Amino acid sequence: MTDAIQQDDIDELLPASHISLAEPPAEKEACIEHLLDLLVDAGRVDDRQTALDALLTREEQTTTGVGMGIGIPHAKTDAVSKPSLAFTRSDDGVDFGSMDGEPATLIFQILVPEEGGEDHLSILSSLSRSLMHDDVRERLHEADDEAAVQNTLREALA
Image (cartoon, rainbow, N blue to C red):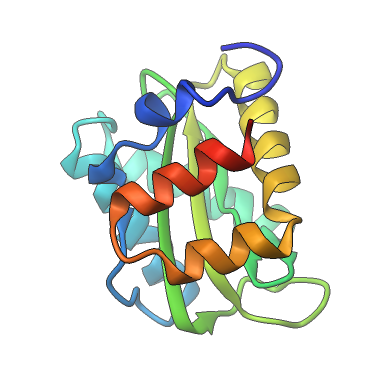
């Protein structure tokens, strides 16, 4: 990967199988597991428990609720062999402990290999920058299928 996520990276990072448009569990840990299971089912995670432990340890260190209705649980772990991204959204929101006190309604999960520090920061910063735009968040909320989610992110990263 390069310094930032490129449009072409979306298909590899976030294929349709990594996207759930069904209402996720309302509790944070269960929501994290919901997203993790998308990656497990897609064959991206070699060891579910190790990946879950890494995600929950990261949650204990500091909030992954970034504000504006966005949650981005993330971790580096040897339980994955390549950078992976999963997405879900919630009508009611999930409490990720954001500074603005708002629940997360758009939730992305990032998992990268332990040695993938640069990829981790690249994905996190590119995603965070694109999600700062009201129209991007609105389009993600309104997306009626996985392709619409992918296209919104592709356009936001252009």
